[in-house]
Image (cartoon, rainbow, N blue to C red; front, side, top):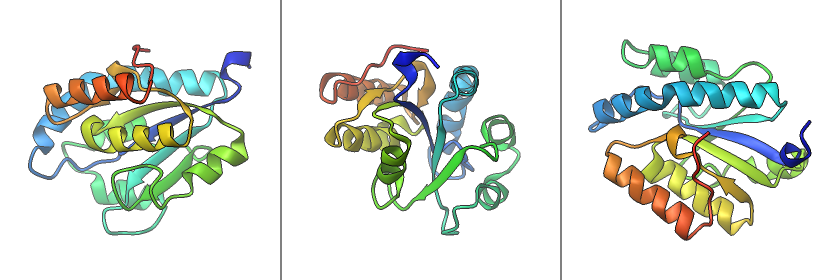
Length: 177
């Protein structure tokens, strides 16, 4: 493994989504735009033996079983994204009760156990869940990379502002992958 990647983990936030809410159509369209980049990021992680950690909303199911979350979220709109981006059996899958991937989840413990200090964060919604997750990662002193071509929000201007905050305040690298 490349020495520079030995401390790296990839975190995919809320990619299993039903897009069934106000603003969901916009988020769906913007997610479709970044899907090729997410596919490349997942492929990069697999090729470089980086842990892929999915952290997802629980949709009231409260079970950290990605198949149950997929069954709940899968619909005509979401099926393609879910099928392409769903976790493999060797990936990690955590549920979260709120916006941040760290808030009341075992993510920090998992990263410590895996000896990871550098995070590549991607997924949706950038202006909420990834922003909150990046804020917590920054507070826990992780090095953060949020590729701007691997994050989508309902509105592009909100996405751009979240990227600006992550870069300027949280010192996140936002270069594309």
